[in-house]
Length: 218
Image (cartoon, rainbow, N blue to C red; front, side):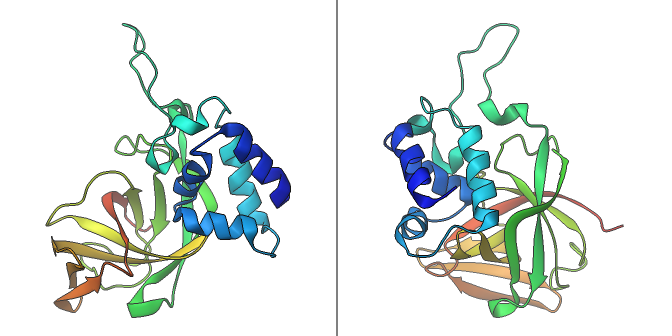
């Protein structure tokens, strides 16, 4: 797929399709706009994820897609409750992570390294799992634990979360911390090893996704 083809596909899906694609990729719409209009070619991993989104987003539905690319609910019947279209998918992507980001963050790449059975707690199609790198949240979470991330549940004080700083269309920095409180410009967070509290700048760490479960390392 080239950018000309992608632009045509987005145009055929109507207003809102580019934003819906950005939400599916987990990036700001401006990043998709730069991706479409910059001289560089699409990378293989970008093409794979975009084609996956296109294949499961009918042209008649894309413009109605709410944030994060979740498809709208259908009309319920007594035997079939309404549910997002992508509930048909029973597995969930497991993303790769490596240490080395700013402030001790993990560098997370959104090209799946595996697909795992979807836990009951994560019945939204854009949920994902990631292996934890680092020991700053031990003993609650240890290096190698598989963390389950829900990108829609609003976090509250006391929740364990993945704080996100976008890098490009396929990768971001992620910090696993406990949310203490939020202000208009800061996240006050806590870690356990060593135990301390500190602030994250919300202009840099613009997203926060709730951790709803884990699988202990083998």
